Length: 394
Image (cartoon, rainbow, N blue to C red; front, side, top):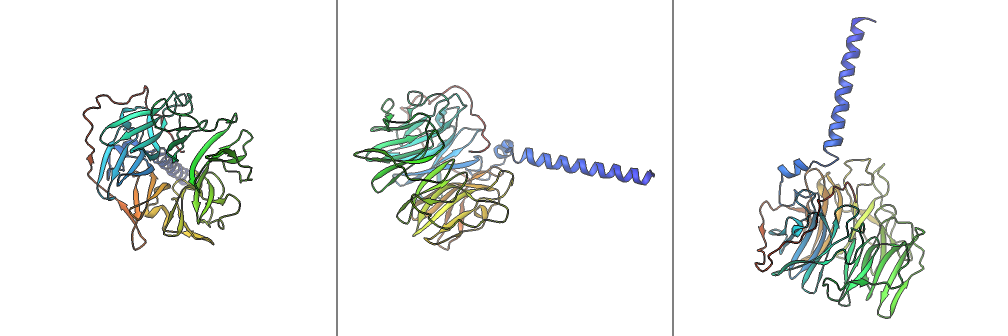
């Protein structure tokens, strides 16, 4: 073997090693989330968060709950989508509550559902009442250790409802100690995923022990487990579209009406597979579906927002609402006649954007924010032992 051949092999080896190191560095530093990057280089008040997870409206304010493992979950509010106030930037002092995943307004307060800590922690529901402060509404008095994820909150007939993996509970007051099971005949081994009010009834998704998906209907005259055959959706979410109740999946199929297909499956980019639906919103006679990246193997494929009429669906805007690092549209709502979306962004931080009059998306980009003045009568913080636990995907 000539010295030229040996030299060429050595150079090729060095190039290969450098390439592998670069790929490894990208996959580790970028895809396993650069907490240091997010902590040291915030671009606006939301970008220290990895995701905006939930919205709710109360007294003219839009509230936004976030996912943040560094400071713990945050709660923000705005009256105009331009100026924002921080209600809490440390999960009201709860050191394990890294995510505020569900919000709802009830009895003049914002109720916050959390993902709380490690697998042996109970879920938490926090009541934040403007001008008075925060207090725990439900914890280990309602949820068992390991049942730590409040997946959805809803209000129906002056009652507050909540679902976790193992429990479907309700309260007439939202006070600590007032929650009880909302389905007295609850089966063993079931799990719950979403809630929605439709046609003056409350509907709940139930995955039974045999993995079949059913819908629980709650009415004033009783609770009924419907026998409607539904597609196999591992993480179903309920919404409405065009006057119909629909169910979509976080992990598989396109949105489906309870009895009939809603619309043809939206086409996605070549090689991306079916979109995974995470949120829905109705706006100006159309239904919008927010998705996440279709495969975790396709590391930076951006989320897609679909817009649908009763016949077809199409991409409503460029992927990621204009930012390829927005890998999931995690929540949507309508506030002050504008469609508002929150995203997961694990590179440059979470974003909030709204649809403008010319049908373009405008990113909310406040670089400074005020803090809601604390109530001086509230002397102590909410607390729970331990630290927030990292989570790689929902």
